[in-house]
Length: 491
Image (cartoon, rainbow, N blue to C red; front, side, top):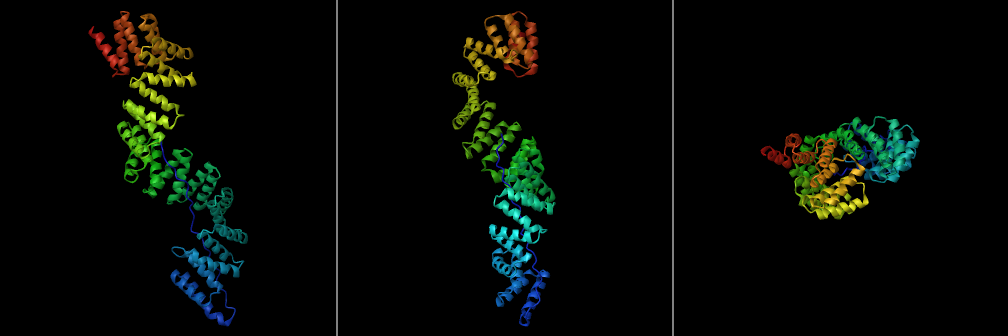
């Protein structure tokens, strides 16, 4: 089980595109000629890339002639072009110019940009709608309207508007990214991921586009499709912890263990206090066979977030595999307390209790679970084995028979019935049961061992030794097999 927070999409908005004002009009009166010449000179400064000089020149004109519409229009435009932009200064100038020139497309569009820059989205939307009506082939107002709808979470309208913008500029990555957000908000997740991916492929040096595409595919549980975009995003900004963690998680899911391990190791200085980081590190270590390292990572995750259900579960499983059955029981006990509806937590706790020899508690759990799910052969077998271990032979026999009634070839149950026959010295029936168990599961080593003992009692020691030798090839470290083989050879 992997744990990760997937960040939501980011709106990638271009700086609103201000439109160059219409050229200054000729003076209507002779006494305005000097003012008009100053306006023309200021425009020339802008054309020569002297933005600062142009701003000062227009400020000078307006200081003496505050109602000069050309200067209002141009200075408002220039305030949108400064670094950083100053839309708050542009708004009052462009509002005045818009009143004086209500049909001026450039003034209307720039006023929309100024409103947008000051977060007056409703006013900006009104302006862009006006511009789009005045010039139906103009891309910028359509794109900006779509972006505003996204910010207002009006996803259906955003989708419709941005599709129109995409038709006007099919290869604009900003349109495709924000169309992805509109699709996602409208629950069209497949289309969203495709749009984000197209945006990133059109502009491969944009971190936001790559991140949005990668995370969109992760939200769809498509790690293969997410991988190239996450790798692209990580290459553009290796310090983004969300991307790094998502990429490491994706490597883990795709079984690229070495890549995941290296990335998690590199993340430790920045994410050492992050529970999800330690949890995922535990997953990677466990997959690489480093169970002790996994336990250490899960323990750190639990110290940060003591009640995380997945961490408790995984730590319990690792402790069980390491033979720390007491620790395993503690984890599953805590887990079942936090999540009483989790049947698996109770069953895992029972398995740990059985390993500790606490068969009474384990049996109580198995019996309760079997009341709800009487067809669970695996639980009935565990109960039968526990009854056998506590010398409740009749109860064990009954459970083995119940399993075989539903599954005549169940190897574990056949082995259990063989044990009951062997205990009663019904050697022929025992031999048949053990052989049937081996036929059903050729790797069930206990059945080989038990059959060998049966054959020994039937004075067929040579066959018994041959059988134990076969068992040892399957499981060389089995202590029962090795002990019986040594004893029979010595005798």
